[in-house]
Image (cartoon, rainbow, N blue to C red; front, side, top):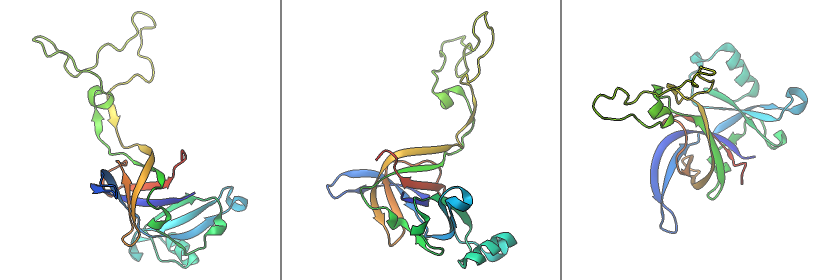
Length: 208
């Protein structure tokens, strides 16, 4: 399975070869170094651990310094695991770049959505607002929530105001429009979760 980690740069529009204007999300994929391999015999699953992002040595713990020194790779800010079909296809020190994908591929992209704080029922759930007539005291508040006389309580999971956003979101089946391997950018059709500079997990779609 193809899998890579990137950062959201923003959105723009580009013209395709058939002169169609397509909105795309620009994702920067910094080269990721294989630091460790996880095997089924030892760990119970197959995956590779990759490191990416620049970091200064004095900002790392002794444990992390030893972990990178053991693999004989440069120090990295982030460590993440990527599931793979076979760890034999990778070696410690290998680099994974944006060119694992190519134009025409379809991907699933996961990220953390923007946190919007505490919001009311209209913004959070799309409820209708109350009347604007004179004397009305219900404009953006919730209506009745109880269940009449019996059982006379508000059921669990009732949609109310509360924290909105800041959740793991996956957008499936997005088309890769262009891959700039030289500058490590992937352009994907449509929007992707999260704010600018947010981490994104890009993998081959499960619905393809």
